[in-house]
Image 1: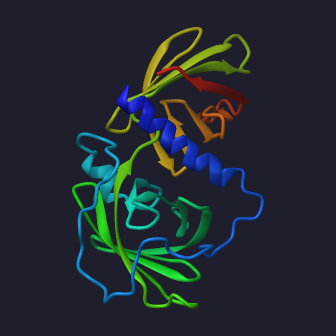
Image 2: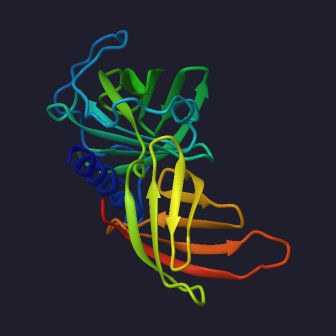
Length: 242
């Protein structure tokens, strides 16, 4: 039940950004509870619990990852980061979704937006650090934040349909360390998956599925055979059942 609720939080955050028609790159409004103070060292405010033990390999691969937690604004308001593999940072807070850029240096991550910067250190799947307003009337205002690595697919199962001839019903089951299983009309096969925030790639021996997590929690996309003898492609659409 906990995992299902947390998955819903991640999906809702990604969906909020996905349906934004014109996402801005500056945080609107003013910080509600922070006060102008000198930047302090990392702290540990309460954070949303996402995974018991995040896979070490997944946490090391910061590009493409999702992070969920809180910040000392808006009464410990929600804070979600999506760190795309192209260097784009998506931040969803208590007010809106904004975009910026990020860089990784070892275990340190810097996220830069139009009027604020977040600097954090990653330890055991948790990013903790400070943020500061860099422009405007509140320039210099600082606060702390903490977010935890979140895999929106780990442990989930999806069922639906694919348009491949002689198939139809299809089920995907995702493990907690990057493994995937597909059950279709003819067999059960094992493979692997990787994600880039809201995009997922599921690979098997002779085919690959590439989809996007939609605002309604479904995954939709296209698939193709990867063998030289067969270049057939088809579509698929599945919904979460676990």
